[in-house]
Image (tube, rainbow, N blue to C red; front, side, top):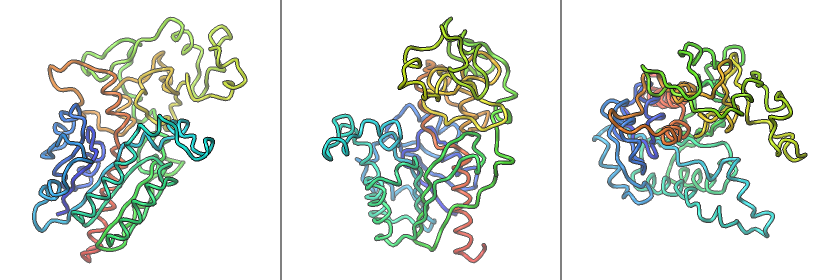
Length: 360
């Protein structure tokens, strides 16, 4: 049976998807120990290892694999340095090729080199890496792919539209698969624009809840408070709309400026019959994106955000007796690999192994 180690595992979105696909994930590694409970509680015998991947000796990872198993190494290095948002800090082209201080201080982009270093030392049979699409345009990604080829891997990668793989949000992700056993590729899409998973299908049956309230049966089904002004704003908002739908006295000063009139991606309601916007780490805030509920006067709850990331309804994020931290849980959910995309990666790996063994 293939055995998997998940680098930068977080609360286990990728691990859980691989588990649902039938792969044996033995361990997840992440520097953020606050992810431990959710990772281990929801993922069977998979063990959480609190460690900095860039400082962990590759031999420690190699020891996690049983003998004679097909060894699979997967991971999603933190993607903030490559996101569209972060790119506004990178002004190398405008500054004679010099990157600014904000970018220079952020060493997370180097984690992909750490990933490649681990691959070189333990040579797993199969490697998978998931990240933001913008990474494909970076030198670090070219270096990563070239290193894999140099180590004897067949490499393929795609930018995928997540609804095509069962994730109910308008999210695009870069998925790389590499194998020393033969050619490997991601499975074909499972959905099309006629049957994409929608907001209504995934959160339409959630119990109604007011802004600032919490469902007594599920602490995760809790909505952030709204100020009196934002409550008026959301009541003026329509599904698929924006701040343009508000009364003039509710509009922000920046919206009235020429530079702000085209910025439409905040303060909106989602549409029932479409995938949601991309779930970010601040999806629970009405003003942080188009995260208004389609009908109720509030933003998404934490549970609804998890469902739109395709986590199962019973996925546990909070240890019993632990203090509730909305911001921390929002980061955990927003940073996760969508579970159903993880399942598609897992099925692709299983199919590849079956083909190599003549069972495909």
